[in-house]
Image (cartoon, rainbow, N blue to C red; front, side, top):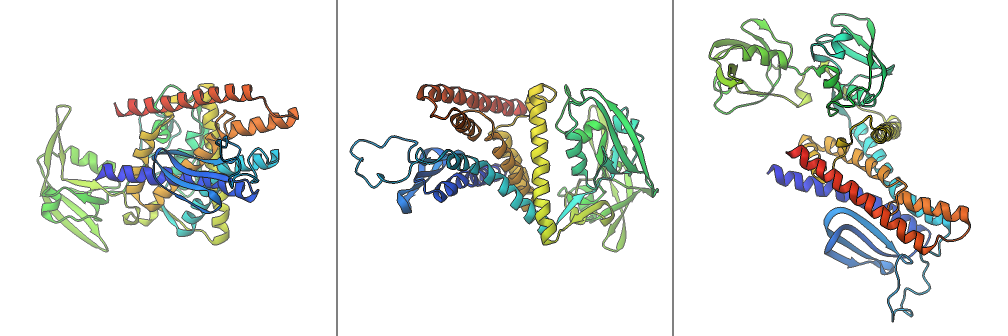
Length: 454
């Protein structure tokens, strides 16, 4: 079932962002009356196709890894068709350089527009976020050096205000590979005042795990002790604990986080314990016997419960609810798209300079896994994934590499400066180099995916 979700999510995600990209090219080409011969999503053998108006063929390929819009002038009219209905129609080569540039840039622009629309809708619908409270600090970490403690709330990093844990990760990810200092603003538990601390970094995480900057900084989010699920016929299930229960104490010792609960239960294998839980407005007390399991030759206790990832079940004081008005949602769409675009550009720059590992480049396998996870997490998570990948596709296509939109824009710019068409020989050689570069990048991304799986 999980595999089916991954496959369907991947196909839906790629088809949408590729379809929107090609629709951008298609729409602007039609606007300038350039005749479009074919609109295709996917590569390889056609699964289905139909002939639309104005002699344009629409088709769906078997491999959902790309697509293209073929315009008149981008191919040679077969012999015997000189008198066909294609003659007299405006080709891509007949268009002015400005019109061709507009058609080329329309694809990436459509991807950015898709991201703006998605973030607009997300903020209009409203979302619940994990708050910026700290649930754990690693010993010897930068967070410990900054004097951040359990249940402290981070309110700013490098003078950028924040109130969710996702924002912590986002801001810290922009500092990967940097040398200098990170400024942290936080409110200590029980205090109303903001404390400030600065920690020094040098080539931060350039040779370390870069997948979770917050964890590498030394902090974990505050996950409340809310039961999200129970193991069938486990100790907790047998005595009547339910999903949504908030565990308040174990053996009369107060519990404030899931990590604290896990540590307490781990130290109580095969023991009878008492657990107090809050269910709605009522408190219940249960007595049960823990089970044991072996980890690294050490017996640890457990009661067969899983943490909740449904933020609507969490205490209101540690989550952040966001819902914008129409105007603010519109602004949010632009600002959020700009924020992720800037982060990706900075990351690419650091990747080129070597301060960020190229192992972060992911291919179709990683995208499919992420798409499946986002789909299982809910519609809004899946939409967010679409927005981020749409921005990625828009930016990648603007790279000045022949065969990509950025390469075509470069050729148009050269032709405009030169004042005459670029030679066929030069175009042919540049396209070969472009295909080689893109193929190498795809192979490298695919190898990275395989290494992650191994």
